[in-house]
Image 1 (cartoon, rainbow, N blue to C red):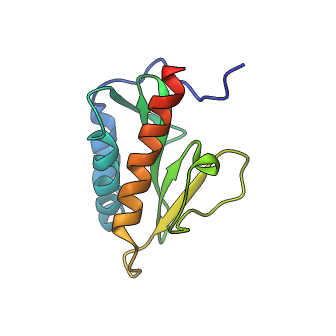
Image 2: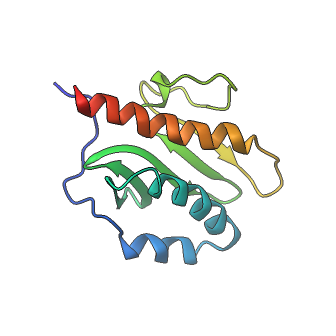
Image 3: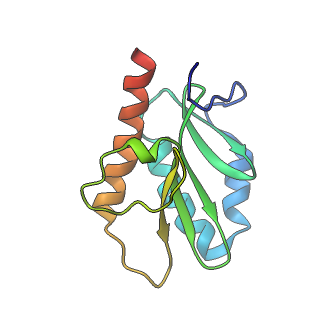
Length: 130
């Protein structure tokens, strides 16, 4: 049985995601920036709103998401618990998922987060190739 979270309704560009960012002010702008990196991972990236937040998929297999809360944004990875994290930026204790908290008042390791997004996409590519 596959442990991948799949969304048959994921599409190339979901306009409702752009609307989602627009109504979240400063945190929406932060979330948009990191989700754009997920969108740009490859031509096979699809997206949808899942559980009320932007979700990036390789085809139909979810690999990342962003979500805005009251004071921070989570940049998350559906198989994050299995990803290498040499900069130790991931938090969470779930069986599969991990995330990075991003706040307007907090300096983060942008290079490490960019690499984590790329790593998550590449990991899903490997999983799908099996």
